[in-house]
Image 1 (cartoon, helix red, strand yellow):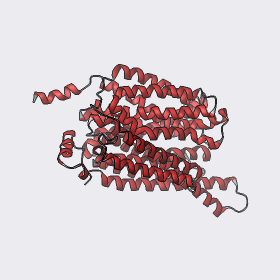
Image 2: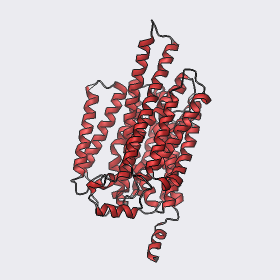
Image 3: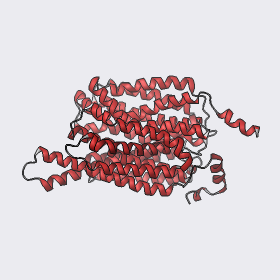
Image 4: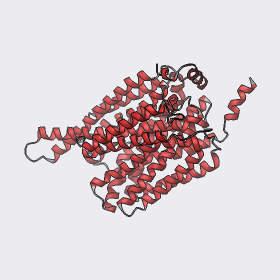
Length: 501
C-alpha cells in the first residue's frame, strides 16, 4: 500500500502549476498566430507591394509547413526529449517572427512564415505532450487541460482583437514582433521550470513514415489552399488532393508493418482517442465559419473597424474559456467525452443557425451577441475535451505523437473548411446576383448578395456541426474516461485490431 501511494507523490512535480503557465503562454502564441496575421495582411500587402494573388501565400506558407511536419515533430519530441524540442520550437518561432516583422519584401515575409510553421510544428505537440506527462493526478489533470482548452478555444478570437489593435495603433509588423515577447517569457520559464524529460529508449525515426505522411499532408493542405483561391475546377487542385489521399493510405498501410512506426496503431485505435482526433478535425472545418466569415460580415457589411470587430468577439472568447475550464473539471470526469462533444457540437450548430438571421443592417445586440455566446460555449466544451481525451491513457513514449495528432486534425480540418466554405460563399453570392440583377448591380444588391453568401456558409456550418455530433457521438464511448491502468490492461488483453469494436 505504501508503494502504491508513493507513486503519485514521486510523480508530482512541485513546479507543475508554473510549468502549466509556461505551456499556456506558448500555446497562446501558436493559437494567436493562426488569426493575428489575417488582420495584418492588407497593411502588409500595401507596405511590401505584393499582389492579391500572392497574398494567400503568407497564410499558405505557414499552413503547409505546420501541417506537413506535425507528426514528424511530435515523434521527434518523443525521441530526443520534449524539453529540448519545446525550447527549440520557442526560440526558432521567435527568430522567424522577428525576421517576418522586419521583412523588406514579399519573399522575406513568406520565408519567415514558412519558418514559423516549421518551428510551430515542433512547439505545439511538445507543449501538449509536456502537459500530458506533467499532470498525473486525475483532478489536477482536469484543471490543467481545462486551462489548456480555454487558451485553445479563446486564442483565435483573442488573436483577432490583438491583431486589430496592433495593426490600427502600431504597425502590421507588431503582429509578428509580439511573438518574440511571448516566446521570451516561455523560454525563460521553460528553461528554469521544466524538468529533464525522458526519451523513448531505443527509439528510431520511421523515415518512410515521415516521408509518406509529410508528403500527404503537404499535398492535402496545398490542394485545399488551391481550391480556396483558384476553385475546384483545376487539374492541379485535384491532382494534389488525390496524391495526398494516396500518400496517407500508403502511410496507414506502412504503420501496421513498420518495426517502430511514426504513429503507432495503438494510439489511434482506441475509440475515445480516435473520436477526439475526428472531433477536432470536424470542429476545425466548421469553426472557420465563425472567425473568417463573421469578421468579413462585421467589417465589410456593417463597417466595423478591426478593433471593434475584435471587441465584438470578446464575449465568445470569455465564454469559451470559462466553459473549457468548467467542462474539464466538472463535466468530463462525471459524464465523459461523448456528452461533452454532443453538447458542444449541438451548441455550435444552434449558434450557426441563429446567425443566419443577419441582414445588411443588423444590430449587434439583437442578432450577433446571442449566437456568438452560444458558439463560444460550444467551442469551449469541445476544445477542453479534445486535448484531455486525445492524450488520455497514452504511454509517455507516445505522448508527443498523440499530441501532434490533435494538431494535425485541427490543421487539416481548417484547410478543408477554408476551401469548402469559400467556395460555398462565392457560389451563393454569384447565384443571388444573377437571380436579382436587372442591369448594373447597385451597392445595395451587392451588399445583399454578400449577406446571402454569409448565411449560406452559416447554414453549412450548422450542418457540419450536426453531422459531427452524430458521427463523433457514435464513435466515442459512453461514460467517463477509463483509468490509465484499465486502458493498459485492455490493450494487453485484446488484439489492437479489435479496439474499435
